[in-house]
Length: 146
Length: 146
Image 1 (cartoon, helix red, strand yellow):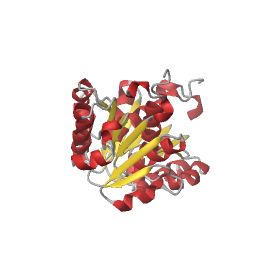
Image 2 (cartoon, each protein chain N blue to C red; image 1 turned 45 degrees about the horizontal axis):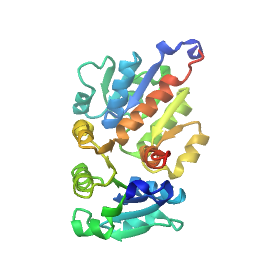
Image 3 (cartoon, each protein chain N blue to C red; image 1 turned 60 degrees about the vertical axis):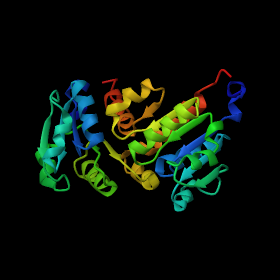
């Protein structure tokens, strides 16, 4: 069923409304995606700003009930962005293995176990590695003409 | 004088040897760049690994003496990567304004003042924004064929 949806119907669940989760939610909202953000701290949702068109759920995403409230079983994409790697990976595994979410991405601070998760079908994104590569490209790519 | 240097002679000072600073230092070392890393905590240098070919200086980069010890006046690039935005910006300004370092990049957690720094000629890199954009591209760019 989900495979028949087109891009515009995609339903995205973001776990964690810190800097990364909220910024991503705003970008996706601007791109007219259906987005739900879960955070256990209601105050975190102010980061979404006034023009955020998605939904918010104040709940602990570690609890299955919270994930069901967010309709994780109907999600096309789940992104876990909390500040805790273990939480991100646990929820990513629940999304992938129990609820068969087609695309699951976990933010990781420490990428040492990255390969294990990717073997489970969970993509990982490490802001540190991404930033280091970007900086390296800025530095090494620069002055190519000299 | 510095403008006559070619790419391979570039001298890069990295302030902060946390996850980002150390990862960047390793990438640049692997690219055969001359790199010096400053951190006030000697224990941080273990992150560089055994194959790091650059130099390390255990010092507080807020002090001018430490920066001179790192030969900041001869640097082509200075990157500030500590966990404190104010520290990163302060050292970036010293590098740019006092020592006329041609390329200065500061890591910022809160990019709200980004524009001000870019007007001063200091590039900024915000790992959160970079990561949010990358995630958005993964999500929105996916299933283009549907």
